[in-house]
Length: 505
Image 1 (cartoon, helix red, strand yellow):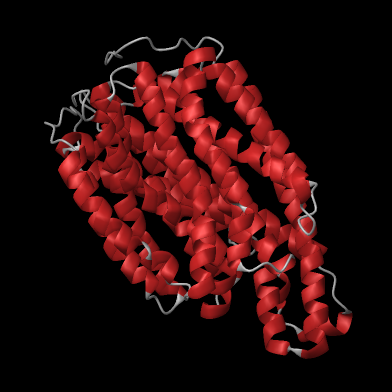
Image 2 (tube, rainbow, N blue to C red):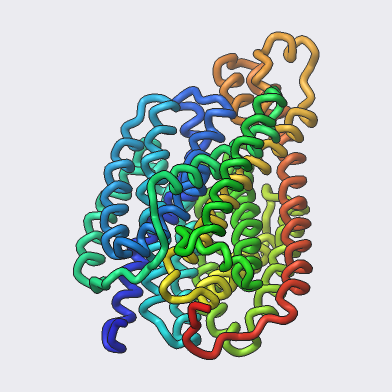
């Protein structure tokens, strides 16, 4: 283990390594209007540009986390950072939606190698549960604040540069982070005992991606039920085959008994639902502020600042509060406050926000940051040290799967509500392409091409419809997180706080 003298320096290195990856999860949200107009992308293409990143990571994280336990977390982290750097350059100079989607796949590969290694390094470096809680809280600060800073950084860049700059900014960051990680993170002899084979890894990756894709496509109109059904059955079949292999193996690639620990299974659910709601809400608010309220990308990013500041406080506070009042109380109360904050935002007027909206943004940032950090403390605190990479990958999978499904669920719900709410004069409706009423982005593209008085009529109709749809999405997110608070209250009723090093059995 790291000596007491340098373990906080190790934490600083992995937190900085995490920063560009977490910012990349949300920086694109603020660039959606610019991307839509610059690439002429459809609403479906925009969803895939955003969504392919968490979708691929959902399939890659567990195999990469388990592989890191075998070959060493430091090595996996450094290789992943290089891949992420090269993919960022490719994304910045993409000239079509298809090229950008391919670059986002490569970004997901690099990120899936880095994220489990970061959590595993923290787990291995901090033996004391209270110190580990503080370390995970600081890591959670980087995650929450980084995700919230993404829109602000994106807004600043888009104010001065083209949309590709939101990816190119990763280059100077990586050139600083990589040497720091190389020199500060100690080399360790890998102690993971699982059996990692490429065949089992491919079965897991294919099963996860097929299952998630089927769920995603099942939400969308115009998708063949037969194709969706076959894909879902194939994905679940592959996952069942993988599970069977693990249960019959004396040294499984992924120890499924980790899910028998209530703190780990419930921590996964918290990560899944909260990250999904947060991703969908951020994307929705970014579009509302720019398309409807008329703010610039930078102004929209500044609007998120209360969320940023509160998120920065929430992580360390979660580590402290968990040590004082316990994980269960912290998790339940943070989720309940987050639900109330989202409900308040869903009923608010963003044209004239006032102090109430600022207070709600602060409460939301603080509570979600605490809730996500509590899930991390639950998972990593309950995992054996030799399975830290696998546990870290499970947690990260919860985040990415939640973000991917959240964007899909809220994006489709927003689109359906928008299409039902938009009201156009009959003559204008007939003159427009059918997709013009599918999303506010496509409405704005159509208005830009038409111009004149019709342009004004179409924009006004789109803004009114989107405001109605936006409120419904936020209220739905509030209801989901409120239900999760009740579920956590029940599921963790017998949870015992860890008092020392956790054994493997």
